[in-house]
Length: 430
Image (cartoon, rainbow, N blue to C red; front, side, top):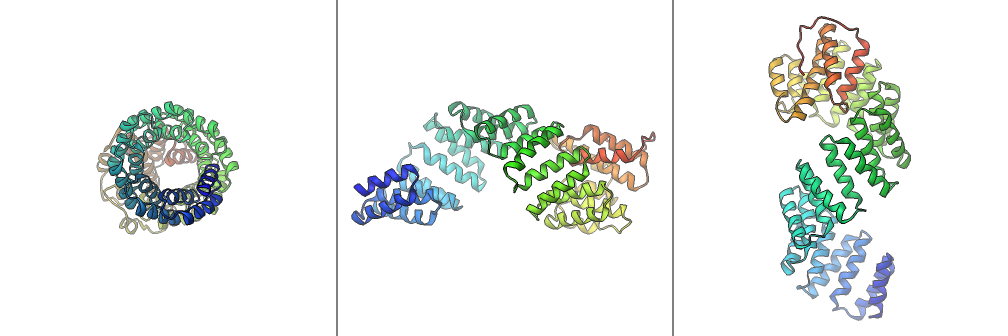
C-alpha cells in the first residue's frame, strides 16, 4: 500500500516516471490488484506512451471485467492513438457496465466525431448532458459537431452554455468565435478571440483567427498587426505569414506580399494556397513566368483545383502560349463550381449557363460565385481585347466581392491598369 499511495501522490504532482516506478513495486507486491495496473496505465497515458498504457489497462480488465474505469481509460488511449473503432468499443463496454456515468458517453461522442459520424457524436454528447447537465465538455464538443454540420445557431447555444459553466474555457470561446465568423458576424468573432488571447496571450491561433476576421471586414492594416504578433510568437507557423501576405496583397503591396508568401513556402514547400496566392502577386508584378511556375506547382499539389487551372490559362494566354485548359479540365470535377467558368473559357457553355450555376445555393454562396463570375469574365474580356467590358466587370467584382476573396484584390489590381471606359456590351451580374 505504501508504494501505491506514494505513486498516487507522484501522479497527482505530474511526476509520472516516479509514479510508474512505484506502481511497478506495488504490482510486484500485489500482482492481482487491478487498480495498480489501471493507475499505472493512466500515468503512461499522461506521458503519451499509449502502448504501455493499453497493456496495463488490458491487465486491469483481465483481473476485473466488471470495472468500467479501465475500459473507459483504454478507450481514451485508443482514441489518442487514432484507433477510433476500438475506442468506441471500449466506451460502449464502459457504458454497459455503468450507464449512468456521463463521461464515457462524452468520450464515445469524441470518437464518433473523429470518425466523421457527427449525428452519433451529437447523440452521445446529448446523453452525457442529460445525465449531467453541469458537465461542461459535452456542451463544447456538441457545439463543435453542430458547427461542423453548418448548424451555427445550435453551435453558439452550446458554446454559450459551456462558457457559462466555465468562464475560463478557452476552447469554447474559440469555437464560438469560429461559429460567429462563419456567420459573417466578425465583431462578435473578434470579441471571442480577444477572450481567448486574454486567457492565454501566448497562444497563436486566436491572433490568426482575429486577423482573418479583421481581414474579412476589410481592415487590412489591423489584420497585419495581428499577424505580426502571431509571427513573433511562432516564427515557424506558415499560416501566419500566408495570412499577412494576403492582407498586403489586398492593399496592393505585391512586394511585401511576395516576401511573406516566400517565407510561408520556405516553411512548408507544399503549401498550395500560398503558392497559388504568390502566383497572383507575381502576375500583378508583371512576372508572368514566375506566376506560371507557382500556378503549375499549385496545380500539381491539387490537380482538381479549377482556380489554378483558370489562372494557368490566363497567364498562358497573356504570354501568347498555347492553352492547356482542356487537358487540365480532365482532372477536375466539372459538376462543381468554378468548373462552369473554365468551360466558358473554352466556349463549351454559354454565359447564361454559368450564371445558372452561380445562382445555385444559399445567398452567401451565390454572392461569392457572382463575384468570381464577374472577375473571371473580366479576365476573359481582357484576353479578347475588350478593355471597356473588362473594366466594367472588374468594377463589379471590386464592389461586390467579399473582401476575403482573392478576386477582390485581383479586381482592384486590374483596375489600376485600366482607364475608365464607357462601352458595356458584355453584361455582368450583381
